[in-house]
Image (cartoon, rainbow, N blue to C red; front, side):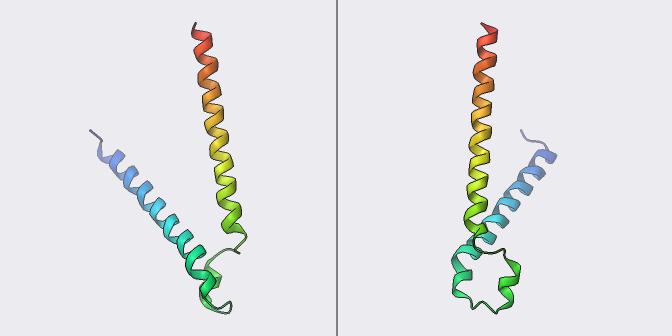
Length: 80
C-alpha cells in the first residue's frame, strides 16, 4: 500500500497535471476567440510557444526513453 507521503506526492502530481491541462486548453482553444486587447492575453505566453513547448517536451521525453533503453540493453549485455 502507498504511504501517506506517496499519496500526497501523487495528488500533487495529478493537481499539477490538471492545472497544466486547463492552462494549455484555455490557451489553445479559448484565447484565439478573445480580442487581443483584453486582460486575459496578459496571462498567457505568445501563441508560437503553444506549438514549440509541447514539441520540445516530446523530443526530450523521446530522448530520455531512448537513453533508458540503451542503458538497459548495455547493462543486460554486461551481465551475460
